[in-house]
Figure 1 (cartoon, rainbow, N blue to C red):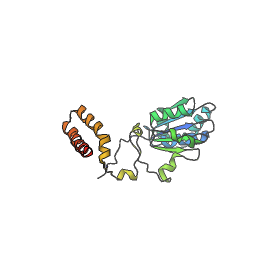
Figure 2 (figure 1 turned 180 degrees about the horizontal axis):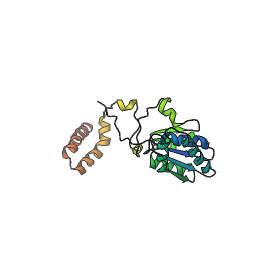
Figure 3 (figure 1 turned 135 degrees about the vertical axis):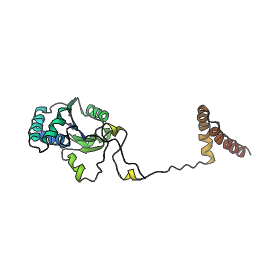
Figure 4 (figure 1 turned 45 degrees about the vertical axis):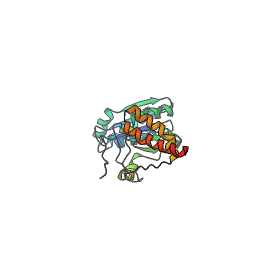
Length: 211
């Protein structure tokens, strides 16, 4: 039996956009999650100067009006928000705190920022990677953590169906090196038998060395 359940709530997307991002793409990506339901949340993070926020907002309004689920999307937009960041470092710092289910990085040379991503359910890099491909075609599983649980959980993958066993094997020399520290920690915890399981062996090792 394998546990794959996780806290899962309304859909989320956080889009980081710079001045090179196409407002049409940004709006479409925001709406692709907003249409899930009125309790979805979409977040736009503006990275740096030069972003035409007005153009993005106009596109959101235009595209939303044309959606069959536009009412849902409109309600979701009502409790969504925009964040202004000085640069990509600050933008990703906010994203890591928010820990979105979906993170879209629609900026120039998006791949260079991957190493700064710490918390996200699934990441979509570059202008040609809409979140929709993750839902249907790119091969990643789309059971993902929401509500900030991406700080603690990963999305479901093949690893979710595996269990692991740890194995330890020390040599005499290994016990001589680690033993005193283990004994001290056991002593601090007040676990005398734990301590003696080490010290009795150490006495035997030392006796052998002395002989």
